Image (cartoon, rainbow, N blue to C red; front, side):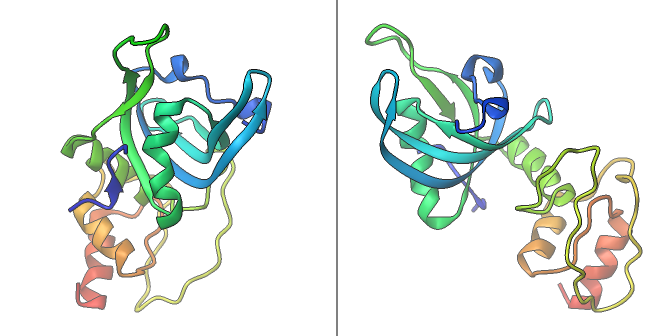
Length: 187
C-alpha cells in the first residue's frame, strides 16, 4: 500500500497552467477545498494546493486548481492532509475542451516521489537555491549532515520507513547513514 492517494491561484507568480505541465509527474499537497469561488467566468469549486513537478523540479507553493476533473481528483486528500501523485494529461473531449486529468501513478512514479520527499521534508518548501531552516530534532545517535545527495541515491523504501517512524532524515543523507539511523532505532 502506498502513502500516496491515487488521483480521485492566488499568487500570479505561482499560477498553475495545466498545459505547461502536460505529461509531467506531479505531486500535490492539497490544503483546502473552496466551494463556489467567484471568478471572471462565474462561480467554481477549487482546491488550494502545493504542487511539485517531479519532472522539472518546479514547486508551486500556493496554487489554486479550478479544472473540474482535477478538483474532483484532489479534494478527497484535503481532509486526510494527504498527497496525490499522478501524471497530468487530458481526457476524452466530450463538451468542447478535453478535461485535464491525473492518470494513476506507477511503482516508478512512487520511487521518484519518495526520493523527492526524502530530499525535501514535507512542508519545508522553498527556493531550491535557498536552504530552508528546520528545527533541530533529537537523534538516537550522531548523524553527520551531508551537503549534497549521495551518488546513486538512497533506498526509497528505507527512507519511507524512517520518515514514517519520525526519524531525523536529512536531505542528502547517504545509504550508510540511513542504515545507521535505522539500526539505532531498531527499524
